[in-house]
Image 1 (tube, rainbow, N blue to C red):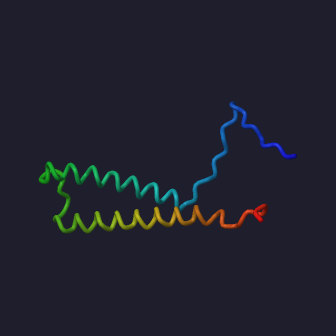
Image 2 (image 1 turned 90 degrees about the horizontal axis):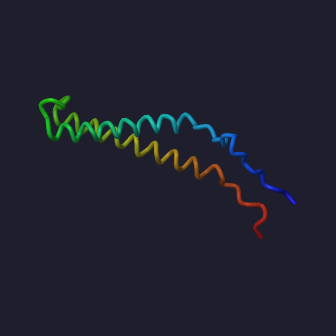
Image 3 (image 1 turned 135 degrees about the horizontal axis):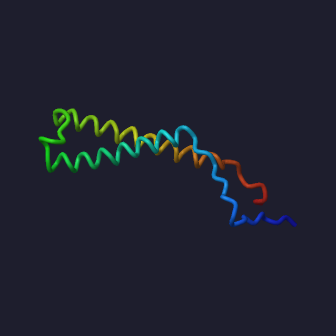
Length: 91
């Protein structure tokens, strides 16, 4: 009979290392959050927070959101593919 190891309270739990893709995704998501704050500020004070023409700002925001969506999808797909092997003890 095998026993599961009991974590000791004084030892930090070992976390799996983040892949470079996850790190890039988290940075892009931080840019998305900053862009959302910028959009809210530009809605109230367009003369102060307007960076370029309105069309250029919209295209830049759409590109940023598309990249973020693709990266989050890739990270989710890779995390679900890691445990693809079927369990051995199923009939």
